[in-house]
Amino acid sequence: MKKIVLLMAALCCALLCSSALAAEKANTPKFTLLKADSGKNLSQMNFSLYSATDTFGQDGIGIGEAAKFTAPGPNWKLMALQFLGWSGFNETTKRLPVDRNFLVEIRDKDLNLLYKFADAQNLYFGSAKGPVITGMEIPALPVTGDFYVIFYDRGSMGLGMESASSNETGKSFFFINGQLAPAEFVNKKTNETVDFNWVIRAIGA
Image (tube, rainbow, N blue to C red):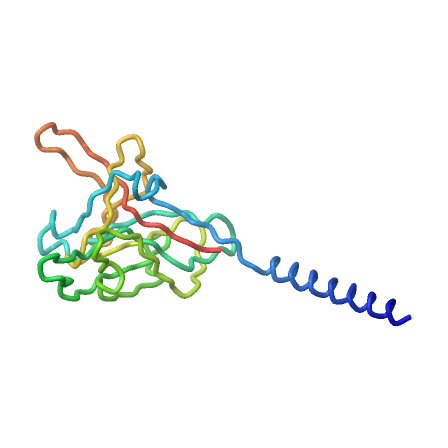
């Protein structure tokens, strides 16, 4: 009798544990990674670092690098962002550049502001080894349909810019004076238009 009671207790415990694990699994959000770039591994990606101040001078401080994404379904929430970038590291002095702030904005399909934050670039992109893909958590933000992630480097660092060639995704733009413009350059020697992808990614569930 004692053995039967112990066996039943063990079975009940196993059932409770499996039910708890199943419930926990059911409640675990399914994260989705959205990419404005080709999605290649960093080691396989043809990229360079770009700052809006390189092209636009001091006016570049107010110009953003924008990536367009589409929420994969209803009730989807944006929870984190990823950027490829580097603020630089002086091998001679073993020092990082002076702290300066970058700015990030999330805007809806009509470019209405949903969320923004600013922080010092060296906290995220101060790797001594070179460019890194850095993650940034944000408060869960409900988004529907198309939305934009806009990064203002403000001359503080370089953002990853992937050479598009055959991998152009059509999701990268400049954000200038509240308007979107194609992320492209014109080669002055060949008059050829060169497209590229910002290495910006969005994570949500």
